[in-house]
Image 1 (cartoon, helix red, strand yellow):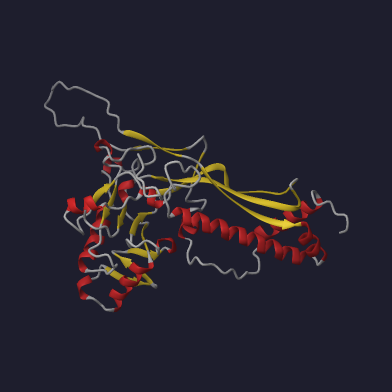
Image 2 (tube, rainbow, N blue to C red):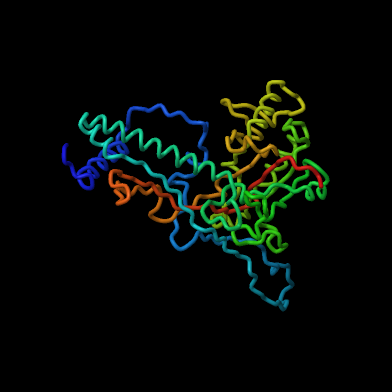
Length: 374
């Protein structure tokens, strides 16, 4: 291989080796990871779950308010007609996730001389490392709001659309277990409140249907009491919606078939402790099935990224209602290998994903977390 052209022959051979790995079921690698699960990456960022769009930004039209033009009338009664503005357009910026896997020329020469299988194994290692790094970042950002009002690099994750209760709301509703659809404009990760949610000001009364359900726990420790079980049951009832029979086929009901609870280790451990104690006060609302806690049939899973949240949040998410929207042509697109004049002894392959998350029905989302009355 002496004198091989690194910018042509080596790139072709490395690209073909990568393609062989992507198409062929490889011998399994052992990869050590701090993260236990990848629920967003494994369930949501799949071809059959995403929405493909073009254009300069993510855009989605929703019916957000009702009109007032319906009434019972007498025969021949004169009526006044009007056209109500019932729609809003949700706008989110495109954000891009990119990861690289790199090969140095010296590594290429060393491994290609040892035979194609060794080069193939190196391709596996580099690509697996890149996949894990990108998956970890995608999963982490799915459980965060953008960093601030000026953050255009990071996506609108679940917390952006699911606003927790405030101390004032706890006081107004009379304590725990009396939640309402009152989650208005979201919080950024820096703690500041956004002026709107995806372009819609949910604090305005005319947009009150664009609010999520929220409530508080009875205590700050994450202990699950009978009143907390009732609060969860109340929340699950509050975020399911049927449609009139005459609208079936045009409007999709929110039945909660893909409802899932997401929380931290503290809450999961306390739920399991209650099950082990066989607490009759809990009734049959909380059960365990195939090593997973179920509340009223909804599976509850631990999310690594929520472990540091001392409010012990329980997100109740109908996964049909928050969808990944992907820019056409940029769904885990592979580019390369390429060389750079600044690093001529390096080949880089990039993987691109341009996307953001959009909400379809914010009323089908809920959060229960501990917030003291104020």
